[in-house]
Image (cartoon, rainbow, N blue to C red):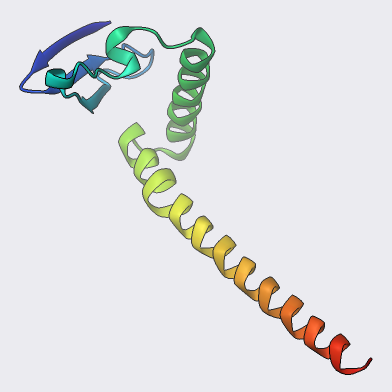
Length: 110
């Protein structure tokens, strides 16, 4: 794992199998003595294992779909995840309105 610091930015080569270059960009404020866990190399091994598994899954899915790793990353984290989140928020509001309406209806029948 290579790392270098330049004007407050940290570039880390994650060196994942199946991917030529994967870089994680983290802003660091070295004046305050803050560096992300990746730069300090204090991440628990479980987090690294989960991250590596997820990257391998995305690389596999990209290969099965015939698209690149970057494209599947955009689809999952920029399109699908936000849409899914908005749908869940919409369902939450609908359920809240139904419960509110039922509560009012039950209160009027007493």
